[in-house]
Length: 112
Image 1 (cartoon, rainbow, N blue to C red):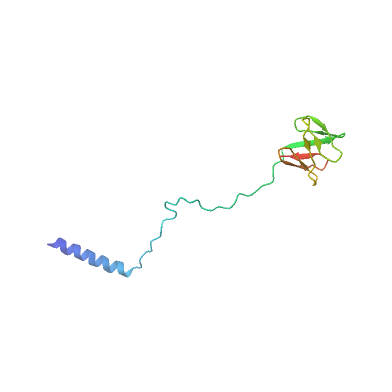
Image 2 (cartoon, rainbow, N blue to C red):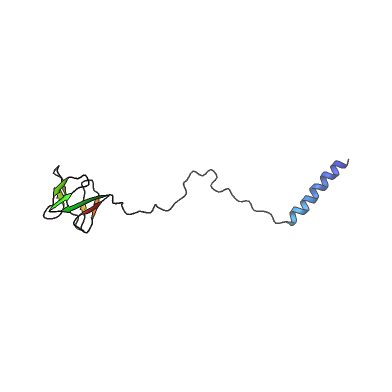
């Protein structure tokens, strides 16, 4: 007989206690089940790393592989396979693969 009385009093007391306290707000879970990627800042672009050097001396260019080619009167040079490597108009040259080499300040070039 006492058990129903104790259960009833427990509910009554818990209702009085919880009604005097501020209710906690439920927060939705962060990205629970989301398949979308979160936006991120674009990767910073960096300057190319120049690892090869084309040097100039006595009217000839020495390529990174050690071969030498004659300098063209208007700038640039012609490779042994006949491909012309033209000047780009800003002191550099454009390689056949589209890479741009910049001037080294001594009529040579720094290439990526």
